[in-house]
Length: 436
Image (cartoon, rainbow, N blue to C red; front, side):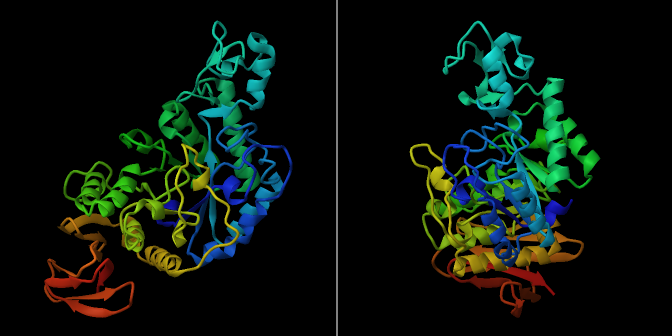
């Protein structure tokens, strides 16, 4: 699967392009801004772009009105075609958000139900009760997503609903040439629907990639052979930042061994989960880490561990952002142009290294040394071995390794050296050593 050795980059288009918060219906070709960033994406070694919702919606994109028309605040279908074609010319794949669990109150079929109620042919597309009233005084009640009544739950066991959604996916593939989908709230999707979707997509494109969103709990149901190829790894996301904030690297090492370890009966060995340090739903990593010296370290860890690394636009140069009174809008800003600085250059170098070394995408994970503030692990496949050593504190540290005059190359500097059993790590240092 092409996604397993890709570098993903996530953009939330409505925020990135500076669209108004509410859909005013005014047509503005704001998607062209993303096309202007394609050279920067190539510069950053990105070869897969994940776009958060782009289709007609009430407000934030996850409240869909129409699955087959680009949101007027972003432009037209032709603008999205041009963006996808521009990315593909540069070797960048495209995945879109597939929001199938719920729709917005402005969704055309729900509005038809509002007009005709029990006489509507679409009443069984939703979970309705005509003996109750909704918070919006519709004269009937309905199920929303986790109590949010602006997000109307779809009946995914209704054949007409499935036909409409599947034909929309076919339209996206044939019209825009997309390469995959990120499935919003996949943990809430009907499992039979998920399996049918996988089969349907692969019938059109055998290499079509599905990554499911799951925030907590076991990943196994989404990672069955006939379900998703990948899922969001929130356990490792949390372990990455809190291990650094607490100077307790045991946490992230424990999670990686639990999920992927080659020696301890891991839950998902050989699986490729979707890894990140932030995204459109959580505070930006530069606003989360207590010590800014840990920013380069956390990216060094992201690109070294098992998983599919995904960058969130702007965080690679250290942009900050926190939720404000529960609002996600501060996490999804508009940037006029990319910022190039020491951090973004460091991330670019790590991305290039990740793409060049097969064992960083496919290798086994094995812990060599773990302390609160130092961590050494190995990625290995088919005789290729890379050792990653991390010092999370602001003082030098000596680590003892199972090496005996081992000849290695420092992949980040190109320096060749012979490692003895005791190695000194500099403050806040991460090293990738490849055996020669």
